[in-house]
Length: 533
Ligand SMILES: Cc1cc2nc3c(=O)[nH]c(=O)nc-3n(C[C@H](O)[C@H](O)[C@H](O)COP(=O)(O)OP(=O)(O)OC[C@H]3O[C@@H](n4cnc5c(N)ncnc54)[C@H](O)[C@@H]3O)c2cc1C
Image (cartoon, rainbow, N blue to C red; front, side, top):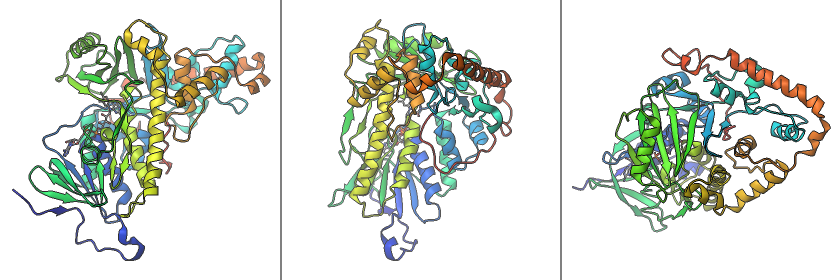
């Protein structure tokens, strides 16, 4: 059966005169997972009033990946950007608060360290506090990490509070993100986008026609119909229905430095109170997550198929979780890496279609949002200026690769050598960009930052320090502060953190009652921060 071609470019919309004649009038987003509906929501918010028609094409036959439950702090800015009420979102997605990630058994079995959100201590001599930390350690002072991180201290106490201006030096450094139910978030964003006028087509894309210049002309559906738009966004998941299957963009495989390539995941009843953080537990062939939601836990084991079988991974996860799965375990395969280009001609890939960094630092959903922010900064017309596309690609590639380096850092600095995977990680070849950061830190305690860094210098410090890398030197500017002066400064910071934690309510106390008073509306800054700490 052949249907007449459909077009998202409504003939009823008058073409504007002059320079506006080449403007993008229609956008087709292929994929109705988190990436597709998030892209649709953000574009509908940004392009509202321009007459641009946005259509999400979603296959009724192909499911979503259905995992992706932990986020990083820019999620809060994103909700504000979308003008979504935070309390309403939390209620409808069974969300809990996340103050960071606690890594257990990574450095050595039995050891734990934090990657908390937010700041650490307070600057001294205009230098970030981690320099003070190195200086104090060199002077022989004994320091406790949680005395200087409000997020880690609250997390270990099972408590949570919102950052508020009046909460002093310790509270000023608080940041938080959310854990949520990925399926409920998909539904929430679907409803949100449709309220903003996004169209929804339930069709399976089987191919596309290309124009003489190689750009996409129209999509072909399994029912024989077709559909055309000016700009295509590929959110079709790992398969990359447009960016790879049609445009053959190519993929860079990073498995040699991020060897985990599979995951098994299932929800289960919570065993305890809900901790306000993600737990990442190193295992023989990878790591397991525990993500607490209001009504259950999300659990998963991310592993290297070269080092454990699927069945062994599932049994290991079941043994650690203890409680029976509340749904059939999902077995997932992936290749860590990225497309050679994220934007190819008139097609932009987002989400799993664009590449995948394994979920150790909960970066994927953020990278979808970040891809849209960058698209808005480089929004094209129908001439698709190659220089504009190149600028977008350069920025997004740098963001992906600096995030990759950050995740590789967690693996390559481990001290454990008890299984083949960990021995491999200690010996594997590292990208030069990461090697440079490690060398600089090892010698001086300084963190080399890059413009596209998603993770701040403090986040890098948390991982270096948590994995036991102590620099050989410290910032000489801190020698101006004597150990006698340092003592009282450190004591007053520790006292401020302690007072903040004592006054905070238990994390569990936020759920089961309306959150409106707990999640006060905070003004959106206007320029979303991409940094996690
Ligand atoms: C093990 C694991 C754990 C993760 N944990 C996290 C985490 O904690 N935090 C985080 O931020 N991210 C996480 N992620 C990533 C996160 O799940 C994804 O980034 C997010 O769900 C977006 O997925 P997606 O929408 O790109 O793809 P999918 O969810 O796979 O959606 C693809 C969509 O495309 C449609 N589609 C596919 N082919 C066609 C076709 N031919 N025609 C029409 N439609 C089509 C499908 O119907 C579906 O709607 C994790 C991923 C994995 C694998």
